[in-house]
Length: 346
Ligand code: P6P
Image (cartoon, rainbow, N blue to C red):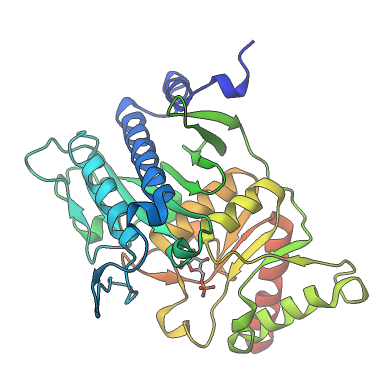
């Protein structure tokens, strides 16, 4: 009998192709990204032994990315691994990264494909030096018809246009979580064989939860509806929610989302006074959208607090958004606080 664990990613993707859900080009794209994630997992796993911890750049001259953040060595290494892995396969027309100012067309020395790949090569990298789980997040869009050398504008498609999305979490296990628009599935890396093996097919997020994830140190900067929402969570069973809640915050989106996909919960990085001018903290194209696609495909919900995340029409490659995602009914509750607040202002 074929159990999940006997099904490697390659076989799973062949089955998706036979079912007409993906084509051979998209299958190759996912295989290539998965292989790059294995390489990143090895680099991350070396830690201090590999001389890969700490910040990129030279002593006293940090390397700052387009986000205005000091790059870690592993941010740069992971980005390079993904760029090299995806250059020659002929499946991509272009790619965009959190670590690069603008998108990059595939070099003309290689054939161009029909897809666009966006990624955060190593999300949560502030956790690397303290050995906390980090991860790679990726999103796949179709390249617009007739475009062979895409520009940033060709990437500005809403999350509903994604044809695939996933992340690889580098934690106690290295686990790839993937959707191609037909459910969300998890593959755990068997390091002896070097294959991702299917360990969870058709993940379903519990609709209700007692667990929320937010950086409480920002509380005084939140909008009133967020203040009210979290105050009611903290009030527990004596409060309006009538039940006690637990809190988790890893400060690594991939780790927090993986926990929520596994046992439910709500993740939030709302607008706050510090990031409101930028539109939020987390990036739409290669953090919020792929995570929202995965969560919705697992029966959850994802919102900016006011509109469905996947419906947001991007205005810029590195656009930031407020994020609420996870257990469907809990996200609806949080959105309700924002809706009621806005209605009172109207
Ligand atoms: P804070 C990591 O830098 C990240 O982009 C997400 O992975 C994470 O959820 C968030 O920022 C953490 O932000 O303000 O709590 O450090």
